[in-house]
Image 1 (cartoon, rainbow, N blue to C red):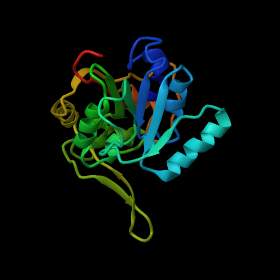
Image 2: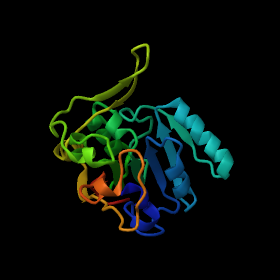
Image 3: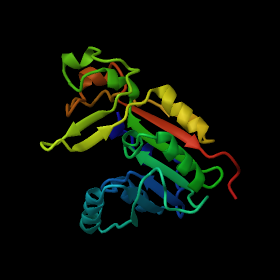
Image 4: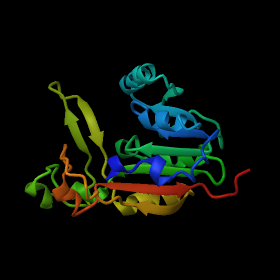
Length: 226
């Protein structure tokens, strides 16, 4: 379960202490809580998000916590950075599922990473697409095809699209990684913790103990660090 999988414990971006002084990019940072946590450990983090509203939340959180990170408003499919300038990049449920061309995101990440640098991104596990967003028994019955890639969209009262999520299978995600010239080193599927009995949104112990809610892709740009 992703809410119990923390970089401080899992070290998916590298061994303890390896990010101190490293230049790290968070893609789809939202309120930048993950960026702030890494900055507190000595990383030089840049948070990127398309949403001005979320970046305002990040600035407010900077003021509350006293830990500020540089923020950039930009599209993840067109990163406004030079080639090979970051020592690591990550995305915790940001950007990747909300971009129609996720392959472009992978290519851009590969471009801005230095040789040998890690790229770790987490998404809702693709298999959950086939199930309703219901934490109870109804959420255990398949309601649509896993292979149906029709985007999920929400609209307001005026018919304007306010939210879009693009489903991709595990195979689609792997294809995007490989096509960008990146190496997939691990696919992590966190298990539901035995001591977690909370229920929120679509998540519950009933569902969580039967199938994963999260998929974490641990990738790397090939090459030897300079």
